[in-house]
Figure 1: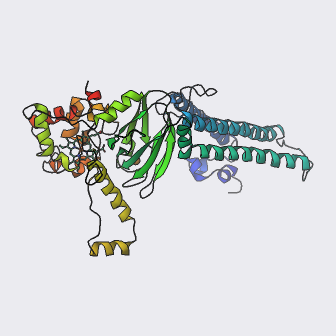
Figure 2 (figure 1 turned 45 degrees about the vertical axis):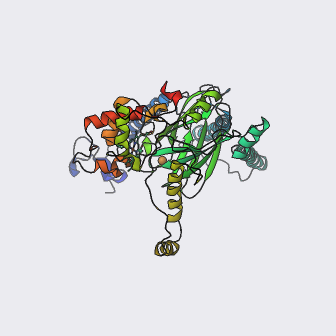
Length: 459
Ligand code: HEC
Ligand SMILES: [Cu+2]
């Protein structure tokens, strides 16, 4: 082996690369030692070029103004960013990023320059060895310390501004109160509860909706985040990002939207099968429009029992068993006896149940033995303002008669893994796992659901 430098230098694997298999005796005693190395060099060059190309292509796919991009196409003015919270976060992000880019280029540049410029050439003698260089060492200790302290202190200041207290301060400076919205994460949709949708208004009542929240423009909104199952994360990239939604714990964050319009939101924490389909929308409305939406929850809609809507209502309440999970109509008007809305009470049940599940096993056992365990129930989107929503299945498809029909007949064809088709009885009786309803019943249901909403949305 000693006289075969080729065999010694290359691993057996690398020999496979040779296109022509060679017998041991074929190996030249003194091959050009560089060939394999040069070829490797060329190959890695191609790999790097390919990787670079992929990165460039990926970067070209980025669109700073995209619905779910936190970036802004105008990094210096941050135009196109929806509000103060997002702007504060993006500014910090930009400064951190570009400071790090400068540091990276300087340090890495110096390293590369030194490695290439002072590369050892054949025959070079050992260069003079230096140990310690006080001014240099002081410089490279002080500069990073100042940088890290500066950026660190700034980050902490920004963190304080993201606390809901800032929203309260902002609102009170204008003599009003922020709007508080409770967002409950469910596998795999969002519920939005407003205990006081019009702060300061005497006639306020509970409002509950799902997947599409509505807020007034230029008003600080405080989000109280809860989960009744696993950890989710609440994120509206253009308005504010990201806060974990943790069972048994209430997290909070705030935002303010400066312009009316529709904003995109997304669950940002892997939470199971349909995690990627757990989207939501935020509709930012003029004050008057928002008030009309809230007021609409108090107006019961009466349907003629002979009309398609009326027949659909019967299916909803009876044959379809939809009402075992869904709340619809004006059910969130406060019940004078219990002081709660129906949906509110239902959702409270889930939350209490999850909190109970987090108790110590022996405490739970004691509760079960004494009959004190809380009741369970299914969580489902409130459908009261369905006609206001532009999407179905938590932001997956546009809402129209066709998609509604498809959703009720076969929810899995729109959203695989959803809990409705998994749990609702009408999907368990047919082999094809579709709703056990006639076409006529389906048609009536669609009419009923399409007519379900505050008057402002039905015009
Ligand atoms: C076992 C409880 C349950 C029953 C019964 C049930 N649903 Fe659902 N429904 C759900 C859940 C859970 C979702 C949310 C699914 C998702 O987006 O992941 C849902 C979603 C919906 C949505 C979409 C709401 C939105 O904003 O995206 C509609 C519409 C709907 N259901 C209608 C019906 C109708 C009509 C019936 C009766 C035929 C029915 N549901 C029966 C649990 C149920
Ligand atoms: Cu989620």
